[in-house]
Length: 72
Image (cartoon, rainbow, N blue to C red; front, side):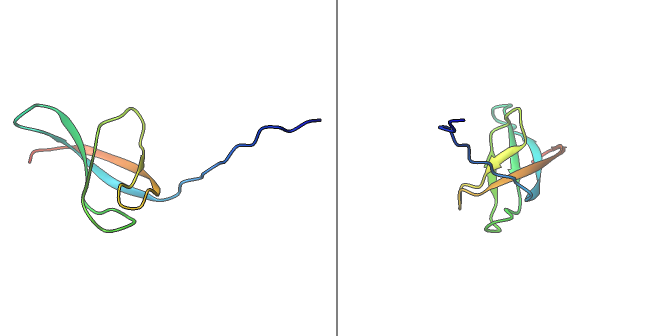
């Protein structure tokens, strides 16, 4: 059997909370991570249809626990 293809698999176990924030100026929704599990800083993410994100500070993945909307 010839195995010409390889796949890298990443299992992400790091989770953090993200709160849905709706901008009062534009009405657009954003995901606000108050405490990045990799660097401790605040990050904003676009609301995609999956909870997997990559930390902009380190490039490491994490999973978001998306919480209810909050008003800014």
